[in-house]
Image (cartoon, rainbow, N blue to C red):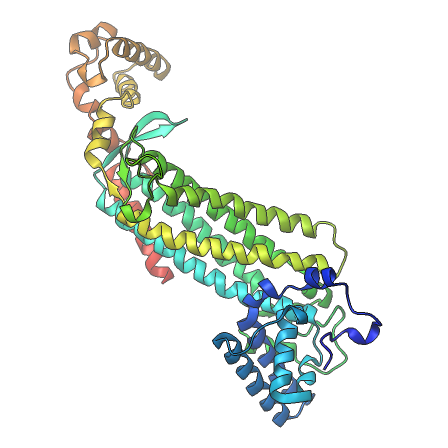
Length: 461
């Protein structure tokens, strides 16, 4: 059998460089499971519709299963000579069942075949990624529950802003990841559509049943337009977009953990199993894992921009440019799976230095807003209270005092309405507890938020 199924039209073999550039088996072999699965469903449909005989279908199906077994066990090897996973499977099937293998491709093109494979692949992988994402969310909830009473400086512009519950800070990432989960779940609507049976561009002359193959493969819908079915890569672009946003959130969390673990902050310490040392400086303990997570974000962004750029000028329907849709998708899937798999245990094993966090809060001026709010409760307009508080803070900075160290006499020199209860008001615990509005950092609100988060995780499992 000719090594090129399209070779009948040609009088010369392709240039060696052309063959190498044209072949995609080095990466699309990742679609082996899906290619076999789609082919078995296609064969079942051909038999159901009377296009091949039942006995032929049985033989083809058994042959496909043997091909899968031989490739996965290493008995059979895939070759660039046959370009891609589809033709490799067909050639190996020919070794199993002879000329009958040629009937496998009846009423099917590689155009709808590869699209089907990618829909099947991405559907499985998105479900898997959602599961890994849920694992991270569980760890965040557990860590938050253990630190409901831990107080840490909160930042804006990377400057001390207001004291917050460390649990509140961690749960902010829970909600980012919850939105990521929602986007991935929603994307399944576009992934869960079958292109199989669309043919090369215009459908087929054979009396096929596309709904039947969709049901066999577990697809919810069938593409209503054959041209769209073979040329649509929106579902991959959407996945890459969702993956980019997810990696952005992972990167932000990684950045914070890197900062928290620095000598300047000393808020957390990573377990040794997630760090490496320096080849020159023996004292170093480098947060390489969160740094790699942060770095791999750019890699995923690149895949998104690459595919968008590839697709932007393509006329309908299939063009060879679209072979570029796979490597970025495969790499993004692998990057996400590994990133989430390492992120969960890294957070779980991270030591939180609660006492140092609390001492840091006591030494700053992040309770200044509460001093201003206190003056407002005494009848002063907020803008005036803001100005007075700013002057008190300036004096305290100059005298190297924090606001709890300013004497009552000094306070009264700015406003006679300030009483001794100001000291309780400015305690870190009081500052945090005072933010009892919905979504605030007060322990009462954080507990409600945590319960909500945990209930969402239970409902999704």
